[in-house]
Image (cartoon, rainbow, N blue to C red; front, side):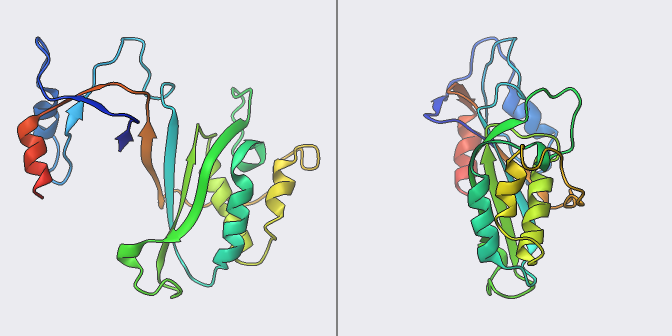
Length: 203
């Protein structure tokens, strides 16, 4: 999903352009629909032009202490050096990133009893950008905290580079439950297929 603040939409087709919405939807399965497109300059980068990204990580409740994990999530919010929460890329010169929010909540549609060991929960983390495997590393440490193997304060220790100059050895969380949920960009003009938009609204 891609979100823009103050969305400016144009319902009219742009003269001389292909019908991108119809072309893309013709190649996609029925459960995936493109609703609009936005013109961008030739210098636009989908990666480097993003203003924020949101990831979700799904997991079973099991016997995890969620209150301890919530306290630890709060310590991760803000500007920090996250070198102890990633796999080091030799080409990366700065490990400072900003997290805007970090929560752990049950997934309502799959969680009739939130405290059940089989209840589905998820972390939701929103940040300016992320280092290589940063989310999986953060989740791995949060699981250790939820299992009682580490205290929430270990987050502060790992963010203190003078106290912990190198990442301790720990296994990162599996990649399968990780979902890139949303990418944000600055305001732009969005061109919609009016008929498709109306049909989708009825679903």
